[in-house]
Length: 482
Image 1: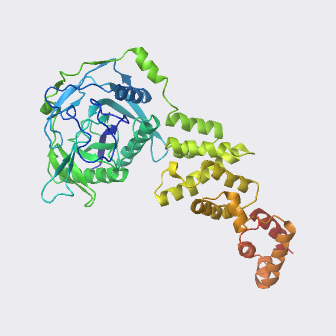
Image 2 (image 1 turned 90 degrees about the vertical axis):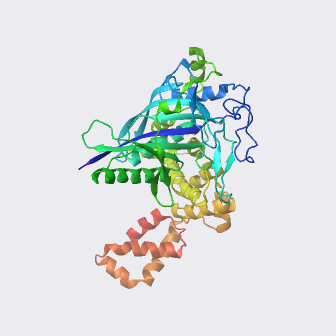
Image 3 (image 1 turned 30 degrees about the vertical axis):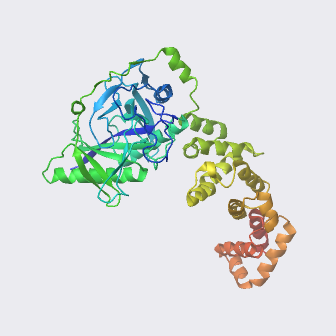
């Protein structure tokens, strides 16, 4: 029996406001526990929440970026439940009238085709606190600094059919909220996390299967692994004659499995009702239009422009626009190059996606912390273009630039890496190599063409890789024929 996977994601993005959604408490990360939660955050009797205008603006900005409907009137509701890290017993959220509805996001699939994932809604809400278990023997601690932190919860339609599609969608949202400057996207600090609703059904069935929700996934790798495990688990249960229970589950990355946390609640279990302390949010068209005018160039728009302006392949454009900072780095480097613009654009793309990204990944750095600036990289590429150094030597120069914080010209001068382009000097080396290897020369002239690479290697070895490769090849072809 062939099974179909059905996935919907609920993404929680922490909005980059300096204060909380209903109080003036700081949202800064890393403060001592319980030093950034005031009486409003904790819902003490007699206090009143006041809505953070910037949080509303950020939610509207997101809605416009995903081509959604931004509500002229939205309502906050109390979602009633008690967890240890939610001491007031309810969370202020939105249910029936969210601020954003009916958006969409286009993702690229493995085969290069595209797919549109619907966004059901995006609503504003406050975060709960955090339970701490690691530093307490037989007890748990509670840190309420996060209580009241502004979130936008982005709920997708159940449109994804594989873990890879889910990750592609999640990455696209992750990139978008950073381009919009509404969320820093830091998954390690909990600024960007998601819950995955997963179900399976027999191929061809229209009715959705019973779903399970996997909570608080905060890495792309864990999300993919959790979905793979959960799909296999559900299929095993059904094929074994059992039934899937609707429940909330947690993913254990150490064991690589999901486990039951609690039975899944429905909206009526939370006893939602309009928050009596907060008025409806009413937005006029002028307010929405003003925010629309502040939208930056979005990832898909930027990728299209790079393809048009720099004649880049779609793959390159998509990789280079995976973050706004990476795209800015690339364009800065490219604009400092002279000569053949098309060749320069592709050369810069190859180096940014290749050696630069490799060094960043190796050292665990973001592009903003690169040890080689965009202008410094351009200086290296200029020396490749004017044949001061070869592409191979450029890699050595780059590593020295990375470790020693020197310019390309400084490294080339100190290490004596300038390329040999004097034809007579290269010819002399070729003649010496031919004289030292008479047997290989005779074999080559008798038809063993593969020995050409041997002679190239010997010349490059003697010149310590400094001989111009193109000249070496041209001169060898002439000399070896006799």
